[in-house]
Image (tube, rainbow, N blue to C red; front, side):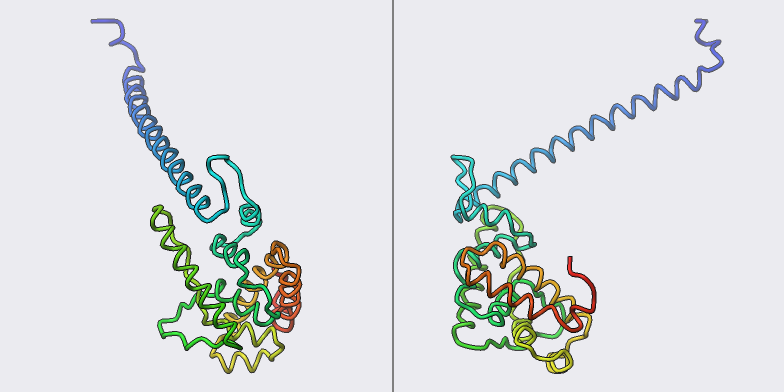
Length: 233
């Protein structure tokens, strides 16, 4: 017999060799999966660039952002491209604080109840027209996202618009909650999200009057139970 057969550690050495072989196979499989993910991420990045190019936020051939693209880079929201489109297409320009808050609330709010939402209310035909333009713009953007095989952004929802308008216009918490059949927690949570996006509009919008109206809306909204509930991030 070969001397190796008399090795007292033979069994453990054989088992170790087997484990090494299995690890080598696992490492190879992981490397293949990682390579596939990198390739997939690269393809998705290319699709995002083409989408941004189509909407005027980037010039892919020149590898640069446009003015719109630089604005978009300062927006932090799950529907950031829709927010940027809303701002750059002037949907918030020329509105007072309460009406501006109502339109921004359409991007923030998501109706989650099993019950159908009530018919949306807006303070004027002009504000309703802004909502209709926002809805149509979102539909076009979602179609473009589908065409590039990208995830679609969440469609805007006008359900909270009337509540946002009332609160920014100065109506009391008790009256709003009673009229809109909201819990206090839901109201505060949605107003905080609204304030966060209004602050961004007040920072990135090109029109000084729009920035001022958004800033006034923030001040009007950050009061009462909203201010008492803690600092907004």
